[in-house]
Length: 546
Image (cartoon, rainbow, N blue to C red; front, side, top):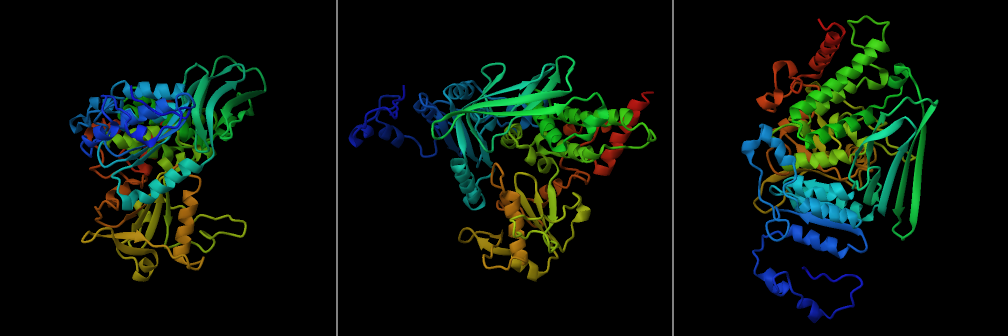
């Protein structure tokens, strides 16, 4: 056993603390002195923290920079690139061993939440370690290729928000529905001890959960109610219950259903369903097919039953779902469903999606593109009432990009600024500066900040826009500067930036042949126009099967 001082232990003298013994009977200090400096005992540290909080509950924050390789919870590097683009690739997303699964269950039952800060310089096996956060209502922060100059601000801001945001403890949530309806699926970071209860050791303003309802029997009332009851403890120790009830009209007309559809919610739940399938041994190819088929089936039902006055040869979209095909294409092309993507990145994305708030979902699959050199006078300026209007959103196509322009792209997680080759020097001098992070190192382009700039100046407008896009986000959005042929650790390769322009056809080297599948199912490489044609063709085939 590991001796751990607990809050109810009597105060010990410093000399006694220094003589505490480790698992092998040796003083802790001398044991540590004999270990190589680069060893990582992450599993043992988290286990010790969980034991410390067992009687009281609370929150653990773990910072990890390398694969645990000593003590309890030791993991082997299983990131075998030979398994990429094969049927066995999905096994790399399945937790390895039982230690972290058991530890996460112990934490949840002890009302202890775990937040992970993964400062990755190499493979960490987040598919295994991430169970600590998924089961306990925690959150994962992932900094791929961590470098202090590139990710230091994000780490600081994320840690600050994590510690200071309003947090409740010992959460217990129950969701009920009217007779005839039942909760079929629940998504998010929680522990399910009982069939109907969601245990959430720690819940905060960034926590998000999703549910899918199904019909058990016919709903005979004019309205159906859904109720969420959350029992929790405040930071001051008060036990409270919060209840939300919503009553919705019941309809038998499909037209009413489509008229009141919410695209952001549909995207969010579709992603959660797809991720759930990935975790249960469904290949990315089949997950993408299911997303495309769901879009086709929905639009076919609308076309058949709600738009009978139009010619069958037309592609008719319901007003609230006009962007559903574009959002579906964005999901299909996303790296989350891309075989061969770095495993830690995909493991993080699965965790991110399961707890993703609805307001993040749309930009996650359908990024927002803005021109920074053509910001209207009314936009990116804070008004007297504190409101800020965003600039017009551009079409996600290379047709929107000019070589003499500067563009900002928001994908829900990060911000990317692309600088054209022919941007006038007077514009770049207002926005950028070159910095050298180490003596003799390469020069890096960095966005400059002028605190004395006029509110209508370009520098001030750009920063106002960035601040607005960063508001109320679960994690801090880092700024990645993209220029042509940039391959440094502080920038993003240009081809990856253009991968976000989902209305274009995918570049030839992005998708492996095993990802694409048959030519008939080749939807992940096509342009938006071609995708609409494919959707229309499939709908016509359902109308005329022969």
